[in-house]
Image (cartoon, rainbow, N blue to C red; front, top):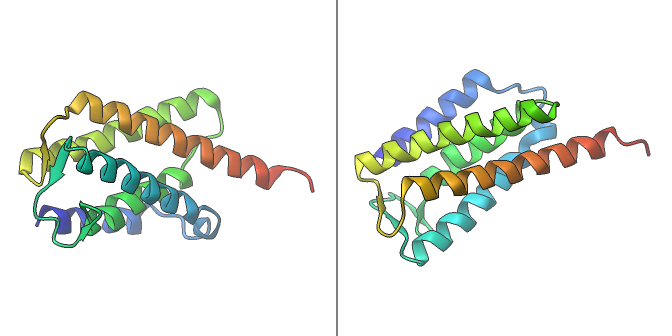
Length: 149
């Protein structure tokens, strides 16, 4: 049940915060986040680092509701609100990492996500790397769009 609640809360957040005019240009950051989430979770789950309990609909050991909820929504919103300056981007990555870690902590506390050979610190480090990669990809795309033909 936590997966379904998180799915609906994610899409509610998207409905409140998304700039639909930019969606056509930025949708791919959500897709990149989904790919990264599935890579990280598949590796972690198959490696016995953590497990997902009652995923409702399993997708490579993860929950489809997590992938299409927070994974897709957070990735899209992250790309949509990426600041231009270097220091601002670093702060942006840190804030989004903190928010995502908070959601993971709630999932652990609810029992929906169970750490077997994993920890909150390791999870935060991986989340930081994922948001750094997303930031780099979004900046790269932005630079390519601004480049002269």
